[in-house]
Image 1 (tube, protein in one colour):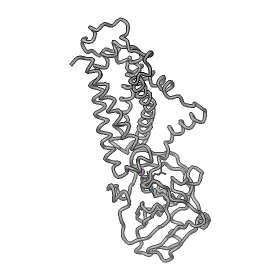
Image 2 (image 1 turned 120 degrees about the vertical axis):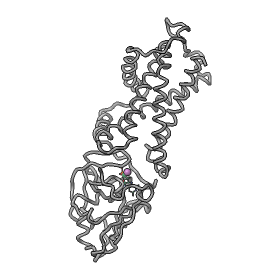
Image 3 (image 1 turned 90 degrees about the horizontal axis):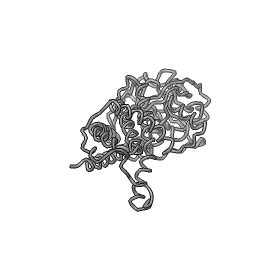
Length: 377
Ligand SMILES: Nc1nc2c(c(=O)[nH]1)N[C@H]1C(S)=C(S)[C@@H](COP(=O)(O)O)O[C@H]1N2
Ligand SMILES: [Mo]
């Protein structure tokens, strides 16, 4: 096989791998797609990770050819190749950490997911432009325009040159890659760089953001006039609260981080709500009522707890987040927040609470074998 063929093959395999990774990545990232495919999300995640590793090995193996190719092609190509190598390294480094999914260093995990998302968002406009130009050229829209020409000073004999990786190559790769990231971002992804936009990037970088996970695509509608919280089961005094009645109960506010078991987190969230123990005091559970099941108005999700796990002032039925009323997608009007447990225990749209004498599995515990207590380790 001559080198020209090898280059073309590398280009195609790279493109296909990248494309598949972007598609599977989008399924894991976009709320709508995630809901659509939620039964397969761990499989997709696993497939995405394996493919990612393969992608890295591929880029790594192809590097000598890429360097050889770069040596005889114009800067325009060098620019794109450096960009891709840098992206591949960034994706792999952050992706491996997410794949391991270790929660020992949540800060590193948070940084990894930010990098992983950021680099991916970066490449989307590039891919669109790349494929668009290829298609337009194929259709002959640029007949008079761009033509690839061999760069100055190199002759065809160079095709057969030995494959060598010099220090100069490595330097070109990294400085080139970084420059490409900056320039590429500026040229290929013209963003309205307003102060508010930059500020929002800053806070997202620092804090993370809520990714809105829901097993159902429509949010339950909250009507303050008809909405009720129903508390019953093994209690002395079953009760029903309207939203106004709830708002008259003692409230509690504090700041704490939120962690989803799939990897993302939001730091320093201001929570406000009613300590669960206030409700417990009012309904007075019977001695057999040692467990609690909470149900969601989405009529799909539920979660279970030991009553003793909920008897801390910081376990709240939250109605405000960062000083604002919960929005529909985040569980309006009421969601649980337990500071010691992963996000899946933070059931949204809570509208029914039942005290029981035995404990069932919750939604994800049943579907995916998540840990019953979901303690953040
Ligand atoms: N009713 C309901 N509550 C839910 C979920 C859900 O799908 N339905 N997802 C859980 C998971 S896995 C997480 S990480 C958090 C996400 O909260 P957010 O959607 O506000 O970001 O909600 C939890 N509560
Ligand atoms: Mo989650």
